[in-house]
Length: 330
Ligand SMILES: Nc1ncnc2c1ncn2[C@@H]1O[C@H](COP(=O)(O)OP(=O)(O)OP(=O)(O)O)[C@@H](O)[C@H]1O
Image 1 (tube, protein in one colour):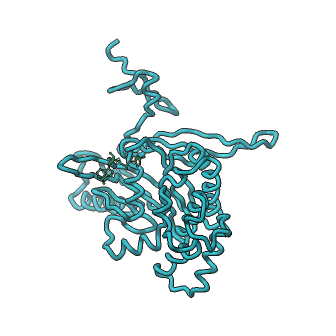
Image 2 (cartoon, helix red, strand yellow):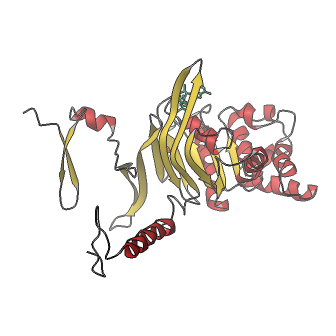
Image 3 (cartoon, helix red, strand yellow):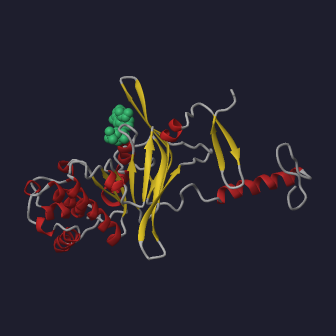
């Protein structure tokens, strides 16, 4: 019964037809006013689907992927080859359009942008760093000119001297001030990637996307490049999403989201704990993703360890849900 004594639920009708209509309107209003999924996130992917069709064969690269990223986060995406990471990054970068679902980045609806809005989005809202250094930098420009170029092309009509000063500041912040007048071929792989980060930050984007940015580097150099991302995140507050196979990178960020078969499957959150003697340690905890329909992906290794497949037994307890191997046949 409702507060005013009216019956509710399937088949219930109000005291009069008018009351029922009012009740329906009230419920519709409550639905309208409920904040939408991920309304306060900077990146919100809601049941994102991307299907590729080649020679009549369909590949579902993204199969209803949900992902929320808060403003100011520095997070990593991991997953096996073919799990859909690059497909997601291309969509977030505005280079590809999803087949279905919803995706919003910094208030932009990625499914609704026309060509002009898409170009502006790529120039002003997102910055990207790719694995292949050649894709990030123009070979005939110096590092400083490479950094100044997006500012010239972007909406910000800044004076040349101002652009040059910003390029210099970014290169210095990322520890590659000495690269200023050099062309990419005169730089090491690590220096090239740090200049590429400066290029991606030139127009002060809301989000910096990086697809395997340390993939071609040795571990010491990768560490320096990751340090540059951290610097950008801490000093400029830029939200950063890094796709990586590099375990060292994945274990240094606060949040690592795993993608499996075109969906986010689990995530690891890390936080610093201080013990009684003041010693700090990083504590990691793994979480499974739960979608709005209640679907849960259990980690493959957990399933294998207990021989779980097809069906599991569930039991609701006061503060948890127990999941057991199927015992129906016993
Ligand atoms: N343009 C395309 N045309 C057809 N199929 C594609 C295309 N791009 C990606 N795919 C397919 O979609 C799936 C996901 O690919 P994607 O490149 O996103 O995976 P990934 O996780 O980035 O893999 P990797 O780590 O190897 O880069 C794969 O099966 C891939 O073959």
